[in-house]
Length: 611
Image (cartoon, rainbow, N blue to C red; front, side):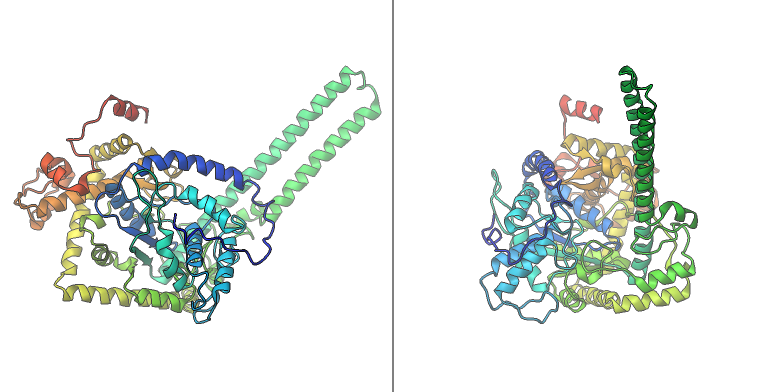
């Protein structure tokens, strides 16, 4: 591991005692350590295909980021470029960036940075203090407090998370961190420790992606998503409280019967005083437990009393009317619009700019910098074309089989009270959301003009990825392809994700939830890998000098429903299974995809049967 990263920083103040709140931390560390030991062997045996590229996906909440995440994961699956495991509270990678930056510049007195403003000068002592405060969770939005009390404490956990080598980060990391701290620490944060044939290294460059969404649409989505989460949490808390109360009452009744039998066996039951005292004490304990549980329910915001009013309790971060299918009433809409509880950093909902900087102006400056590729959700296809040139990817690399969260649709902004929308826009303006979004739009236009000045027809490439997407959507959701790629994931040794297959957040239709697998702890649907593989194969066949195919031929096959099984392919366009073995072997980007030339032995067949 990089020595600059592991430098010993001295803590400047007394750490608060979080022992009572996080007394199970050691248990969690042992659990993750066990997981890391098992997984890192599996992933470290999979060497990158081609020149590895490190990608930091700066991922705000509720911007459509799951779709871009599926593209990055699909590409990473094919190229053995896996994401970093996450764990131990929020913003773990942000903390590693801070420690890296602190270690690198600890003895420098010329560094200019800010803990509260972008122009304030700090010397190395302040930098050290900032790192410790960030590590402990004392900086606004830096993450859960109390998990790390020293740099060495953090190193122990980080060594577990980094046992499996990684090349991307796709987890929500909303750092609320000064620009130059990020610049100083990002490459070091992607450093890899040596293991086996895998050498230790720091990447020469980390490609950075940032996705934004129209602020008003995002605010509406935040309202319904966090309201939905509060509904789930309150329902579970209410269920747990009721179950706990029933268990306590049953236990008291059981103890009462047990003691009564003991008294009877000792001929004490005929003593009225003893019997009455036992009954009285038992009743008092039961009543005390019931009162305690009722007080807890009241503390949770009077959930039981407020259910009839369709409002989540007082513990919610904002009032919510309790229905995903209707707009809120006027008074709740206005309350949310005025409050708009965006925070700097995590936990969310977070301000957009706090994902990549510690101020709105800092975020605008980062968006203006060519080292950060900012995508705009409302112009996703254009953004993906610009991104593919930024990453030096092919068209097939940026094709996705399915948009995420399509099942969690909610009323649009146009259905909300007009006065609430005006108030929302005012609140968004004050929080810097609109300024950041406007700059992202301007920068995207600038990048497109630069590409076109180099002779690249962006709109023509947009048309081509739409064609590829239409083709793979028809293929990958057929029964044949769903089963083929499910079996392929099992053959390769990936585990199904039971956690994500419950589809609690409505990522996909329920019938497709069973096709989700874990890739370095992140959920990847097998049909996403199908989209990535099949789009790459189609593009390869069209561009191949050995085939007389074309994009026009692809469109004709689409028009004839050839990809839906309606007609045969007539224009030499080849899916993966139609490629010859020599064509398949000639393209390393297809090495991890299920070509018919791959043969699996009896052990693989048994694994499929067990799954």
